[in-house]
Image 1 (cartoon, helix red, strand yellow):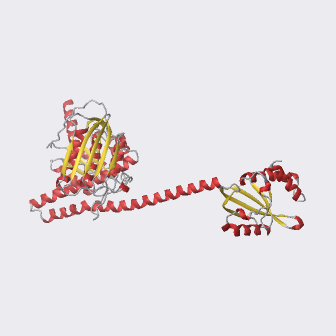
Image 2 (cartoon, rainbow, N blue to C red; image 1 turned 30 degrees about the vertical axis):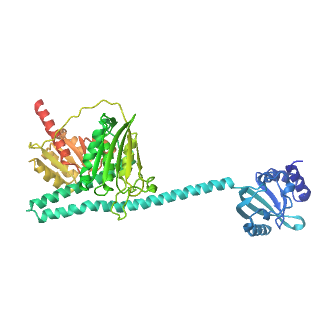
Length: 528
């Protein structure tokens, strides 16, 4: 006779005045652990499903035993209160961790309901479910949520620190720029003082431009809007351009620089400008975190189908705990005990993203604080034909060009107008879209430098309106804007712009646009 049969006979024999055979069959087949308990918690009945859940094969192992004793001692009082409540006609519930008869621990949920017993006495039916799997999933989900919450809190903390650091980094170059302006104003007749102030201001503005460009690049890469302009490039030339770009900082701190190159050519299929940016960032970090008189080494090697560029320094080094987070956004490279070395924590993140876009990798290592650092960039070597370098020297011409500058930033247009005025061009300035269209009709400019984000009528609308004027269809329209994403460039092209320059544009870029106007005028004169 199996356990299920024993249970059925027991309940029929002992409770036939309360339950018929049909009720007994229902309880025996229920997909839960169903028990009938006395008011004192003694097990009077258990169904076959419950036997399996408790890890026993025969009801004799369970019947007559104390249900309360199966729970941890700390829960005994709670179980007795639940039984007493059920006897009084209440629906009570208990949940907790308890052991089965075969010794395993499971998470249970038990519901208690009072039922009529012999001689009008109350007994309790207990329906229990094994919640172990569900509870495990809940705990796992809770752990995931706690981890995500911690990550969000950490990201928020780092964001706040980043904003504070950004403000600090922006103030650093702005302070000498403001001081330089005061020097120029107060010592206008002292040519040496003015020249010294100008040189300082140029360096600080260049630092500001680099800072803003890094921020924009991070945004473009993170959103997937940066496109590489790949071509065949010589790795050694790229590395040397980065070395030359960062040499002034090394010279200022009296660093010893060693560059080791193989004799053979190493050609990559890559975006040269972005790789120069990668190596410049790494060299700049090396110079930044290496004390005066320290040593920096650049080693380029061909490793089969890959090329390794190693940049090592004798600087402050890196703590082992910091290596894992080194390339994460808003993580500072390092900090000396005096707190003098600070940074935005975006340079190395940008380095990693740009290298990965070239299907390469970058790693960092250090023997510890004070032991220097080493960064290794690995890039795939590509068999691509060499492209002959074509030089396009820019020369300043005195030929008169009619220029219209359109920007709601009055200071920006005034300073650019002052700069171009030295070449005796005819210059007009507009501070809004409608004003620009009025000027175009009468002025008939050869070239328009046009801002995009103007209030009321934006630059896109102005460009389309200009292109719709029969007499202005040949004018060169150049976007001069702070927006430089791929989507922005696509929009300017669709709106009728000829070129797209990013603020602040350097003089060489401006002159290149003017050269384009002269070239187009020359072609037009020949056709005539």
